[in-house]
Structures are given as C-alpha cells and as structure tokens.
Length: 111
Ligand SMILES: [Cu+2]
Image 1 (cartoon, protein in one colour):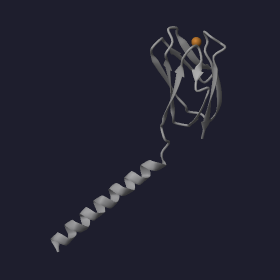
Image 2 (tube, helix red, strand yellow):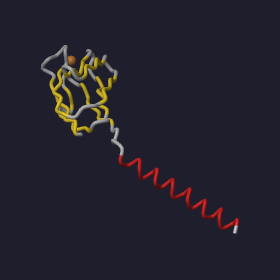
Image 3 (tube, protein in one colour):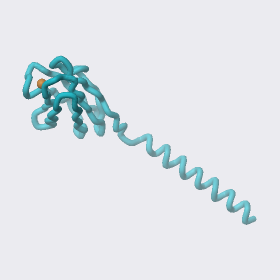
Image 4 (cartoon, protein in one colour):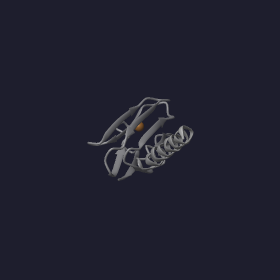
C-alpha cells in the first residue's frame, strides 16, 4: 500500500513538471535579433520582431553609430561594440543613425 502511494506521488510530480514545461511555451519568445552596422549601413534593413524580443546591433565600423527611433529607443554603439534595446510596444519603428542620417532601417514589432 505504502509503495503504491509513493509510486502515485512520483507520477504526480512528473505530471506537474510536464505542466510547467508546457506552460513555458506560451510566453513571449524573448528572441534576440541581430543587426549589423557595417559600411555605414544597417543590415538587415528590416527586422520583424515580437513584443519582448531584443534587438542587438553590432558595430563593425571604425566610427560610432546609433540606432535612434525618436521617442522609442536611442542606442549608441561604439566601434567594434554591441548595443541592445528590448521591444516593449507593438508597431513599426523607423530608425536612423544620429551621426549618419542616411543610415535608415526599421523594426516591425508584432504584439
Ligand atoms: Cu552612424
């Protein structure tokens, strides 16, 4: 009888673990999207992300760049460094480099 109860308790623990694991799949992806700053341009020029995702810019140039979307984010990235911003609001965010306004790209953030 006691043995049977232990076995049943073990099964319950396994089942609880499965529920927690499955529950984790419904959360925001929290993915990291990489954008290069190279030859005074962003690559890629358009990223599709979701709320909760992070954009990481990697500056491959020998001059500083920014990723600046007025009122949303302003990330300064020194040469050979990386900078990040997390996307908290859905929408389309066009951004530029404050030092080189010809550098343009956009991030589409889906809910
Ligand atoms: Cu720049």
